[in-house]
Length: 185
Image (cartoon, rainbow, N blue to C red; front, side, top):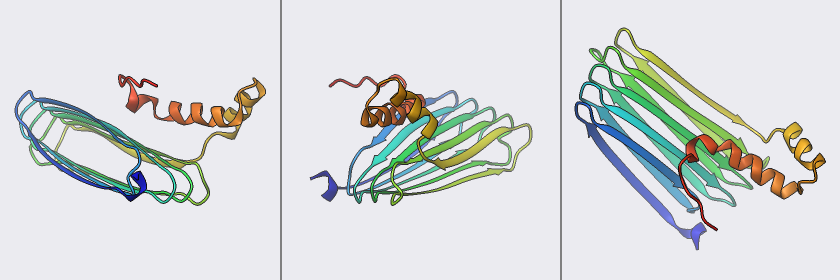
């Protein structure tokens, strides 16, 4: 059963000059999941786009840790991760972007948004941004919240059943990281 499964993965990536890496990851139901991703942008103009989502329920636990190091000039990174926890599930997200000395012209972004669907669910997020270079664009942020009650009311007042309304809003919450992924019934 999925609730008894343990998943552990680690990725260590070094991007050379002009290299581009685009990843999409989904954590959808292990009893315990741990994802460690370490990326070094070592070549000028290297680019990273990492998108992902964690959707947990029951007593599932997921831990995603990202470290992106800008080492070379004019490199860019965009890490977007969404977390959803229901029932007694627990998610942890740790994201660090480090722009090292000499990595001038870097463009670094880190976004972690989370949605609690139960008062017993828990999500911990720890975004970190360290800048040791000049002329850098960088942004990071994290949120933890619940479904918008007004949006739920709006859908319900238009005849959408409660569970379907929750599902639609939850899917919409992850839309930017799921873009381009095809789901078939």
